[in-house]
Length: 368
Image 1 (spheres, rainbow, N blue to C red):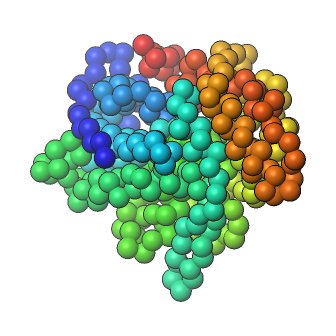
Image 2 (cartoon, rainbow, N blue to C red):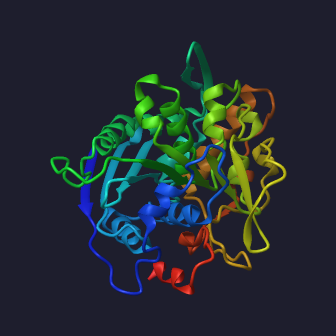
């Protein structure tokens, strides 16, 4: 397990973007059933985008957004043979009242990440609420990556709950954690959902679960299957999924690999703003339905522009074979899908502009 800790410094003008961000995050999502919050989405979307960077960058950006002098922890575990590439960032406000847990998504150039995404398999999470215990089926590869760093993440959150600094656990802060937010892009979004479900469905973690305010995901694939439960419904009410037009990832894994579904509140980027979706994204039947050019962009460019990159050739070949085996095993396909998995996946050149609330134009300076 790889641990890194740091603390950001104060910002120079024109930063911070949101001067009273800790207060804003504590105030947001207090009431059950709260609607999506544009400011929260901007902050969490920025964190999810920069999670593909290093610890120092994440700390600097979150300080510029509004959490000056924040403590930042990076917990990572890599096991190539098991397709585990799990990276989690925890950002704690200087006052201690707010903690953001952010999972890194799939790295385009890492073959093991792609194989982990393709490793659907069979796994489950027991969700307990009172006398009710329900085992829900989950995506095996996603769940494995959550479990790889889960206990380390829980230890950090427990320290925050006790009012300890994540930069220096021996230091006491003025306040204990009051608000926990969980976020992630792509694979990171799926991991965020599975972590929240595990947290809410474990009675021993009730004290932490009570602090969970909301889960915001961006371009998140499907991660759970039926049956539903009271715990799943409770988490779904706090989940805000963001889906961009022509993004194929929220429709995956394909039905040929097993029946998966989305939970929570879905928002789509329409006419330059995020709008509540009238219809939830449906699961793709098979990889044969993927268009020649598909998008997995988190950019909010008005014209939808995004530069294209191709999957590593080794990933295309190996995933193609895994697709064929999965389809054949379910008698839903009889041929190799190699021609279909050569599709171009477009990745945004400006992923940090996931959502811009109605603030002055200086929000654009985050990318500098």
